[in-house]
Length: 501
Ligand code: NDP
Image 1: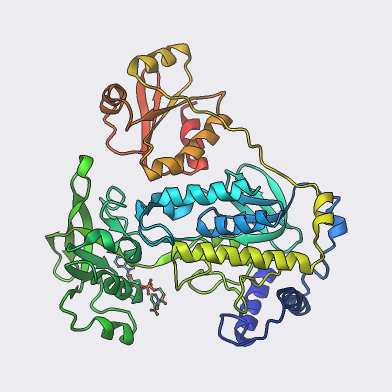
Image 2: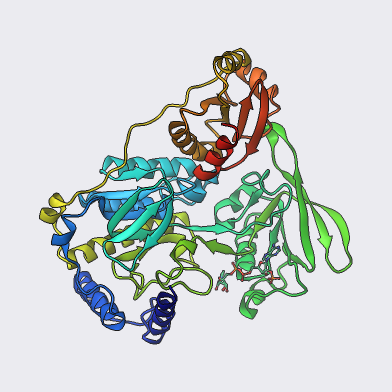
């Protein structure tokens, strides 16, 4: 393990020294196939990695995936469309939040060709497109990868061990959060981390941007074209943004900066007109707390690329972004590619991520060709495909129905309070279905449509005082045993259910 870490550190140093990192070195790539052949030769000669890619040996192995994509946001789905379109078996491992951040976004105004579209609809369209071309989807998360052997070994949380000829990493990045009360409640209802996406919805409003880095400046500059005022809340006594950035906002009458300011809580209205109305602000110098009325909170406190899984396996920069080489999506491991926000600290747009995924798939296809992969070989492979049978979680529409189910057995009853217009609920639904299938012998699962018939809402939603969806409520022995509000991974839901089974 230590030897591998040293190898990755060395590799990073070499990548930088040789000028292969980044996209400005003017290397002559020639044809993409010969380019990848040279990358393979380069990495092999330096580190004694895999010296050959023997496709004949691979035909005798099980669980082969020619193109394995980790992540199902725009980058992963863009890659899936291009992989499947080339008639090559392409598997997408969807990850803990299928569809990624867009599933938690409401209106999107900067997706090309759509003046306004819901985030989940973008994902649904991309997913359907990829699926119609033959891409397969696995509702599971990656637990471990081993890129030191080829085919690359990928283990999933649900116990699958897959062997991939190429891997495209599209695990995205998550905006860092403040972790203060109200942040989750109003996420998407006034709290956001993307001015480019959401500034339009704050026309003539007063908003705050949290953070003192270059992103905070960018966010403020995006916002001033739409809003009435922007107040940048900086937790320290100075901004860490570059001097050139700070100059861009200096003396702008619409932008004010408050230093030593920390949000303690985000407050707002409840019910149908659910939105932010203000923040409780701590002055960390004087310890005074004040109420600041505000319409929107834009977080710019950094992003965390979701790349922990790959530490020690390939070159990752000091901020956690995967290093790619020479204007392509190739990583420092030949045959492994990265696209979207896990490798992009600059653009971070859903639209651009879709394009990056496309490029990564084209790179992966070129790399496969460079090692001799063709349709003849493809037909000889023992490819693995996920079980596509779906598991239906029935609806529960009344308290009487719940009582009947409760009388039938002592198994816990898991209620998923959801709504068709709730992005977080749609993201959670595949997880609920998956766990319902796995735990069908030990628990009963039902969906409750909180946006549905008034009787159902009155009978179940009001009775159980469900104030936010998604909510998972476990009912056992005639009583509510526990509940969880908000997103859950498969493992977390399994653990929750197992506590009461
Ligand atoms: P940074 O990490 O540079 O800045 C994050 C900011 O958020 C800091 O001011 C930090 O405060 C603050 N912060 C962190 N956590 C909290 C918290 N819990 N509460 C309040 N404030 C908090 O991230 P950026 O996204 O701004 O930039 C990332 C990288 O991308 C940088 O290298 C930047 O230069 C680059 N970038 C470049 C751009 C450009 O060139 N145009 C545009 C955008 C980004 P503190 O300073 O006290 O730690």
